[in-house]
Length: 564
Image (tube, rainbow, N blue to C red; front, side):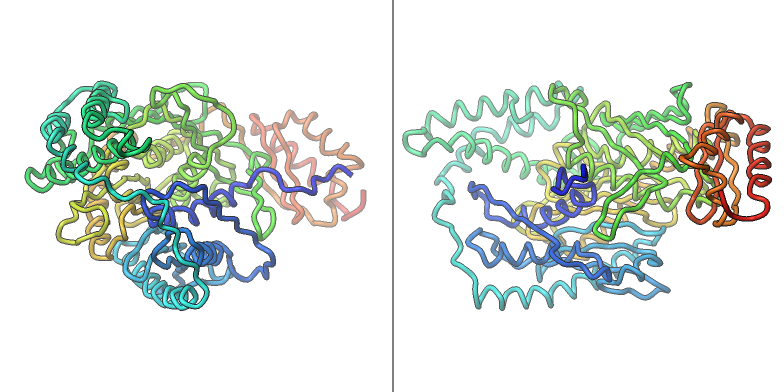
């Protein structure tokens, strides 16, 4: 028949797994590695007992570690759950179904490289304990990977990695330090600042032109231009660190823990169920919410089988939000990852389906980007849900943290400066992107990526506490705009009626070829009618009287038992 027997585009779940495999490995491959490198991961057999994500990530690390690709340290991943105040490493699927924590930790034997996960309003102290436990197990796995490499590993291919050009960094430092410092004192819009200090700005153009007079292509090869830009980026990163150390200031003049100005408007779009405009500095999102019945649930394909999501958040990052042109079409991997993070952050705050029987679709359209639009999506999405009348008792907010180091090749607890609400530049040139979301009491979602050799638990603890303080400030600003959910649903939202019939009578309600159910929808002016395999029926429509009449009709229809 027409059944597609070949794999097509990767499912959302596969994209998310690919990201947690890639993110901890990429920063550890030696700088200067230019060969195309592909990691392929297949699930060849699955017993259904445990998730395969961390196993696949550790297997990918092992394959790269024993290959000639210059990954110089063993990397492993583990999952940590929490049941009845007891941590469980690599829990079963049944255990994860009741766990208050879903934490994935990746790292080397010496430091944490990545964390990813969600929690049910857990305090920062619990998160630190979970990360510490996961990292201790990672150390044991890395010992095994070291032994594996010693037995079968290939020599690393280092002959094609260009050595540093003698004198280049010193020459760039001498020429550009004053101009770099001056660029960090510039104010104005992002566009104005990038005209000077962006990757294609006047500062980079001038540096390349001047350095090529001394370090020519004839003497240093065609890669010299990129080497010059890399040296300038390293200088900018170092001066960012120096400004934090000597002045306790950042490149935009803020204090290390200062949050940019926040502007919020709720209910800006009269024709939608819920909406909010959230602006933090030069990052902005328009979040909208649509409420629907069971027919609006999102179907999900996973290795465990197909399922449905009653709530989902879709994140869009068009090229226009960063002043560029480009193709707009399929969802990119980054959009999937950012949307999933924001989705997980809001999920614990939502009412149960019994309390609120609607399906919920949140859309976050990024209209301007200069740092952590995924966390802006958390704030905007939560406000839009409240504007739609979804009963949220514990609003959530998100914040992105960064870290500045004197030497990006290693982390020192004493010399690490943690910064709150990072700019795009601080993300690109810093060494940490740590996103944390939650309410006043605890954490609901988190994501950490490190661009150095790893992060100590001590520095992570400091970052979490600083993030908590920043999160409280953002929640306070959100509260000024909308302190609680709207008391009533908008008139444009269909009303619901839910009841249950005996499973043996489902055929009577559906009728031959669906004739009966279509007739009920048409006769009573319903928006939709969903009949579950367990006999649960959900009616949706704009007239409460017609819903009551339809419910009474169905109950009379099934009197006397099955058949039909």
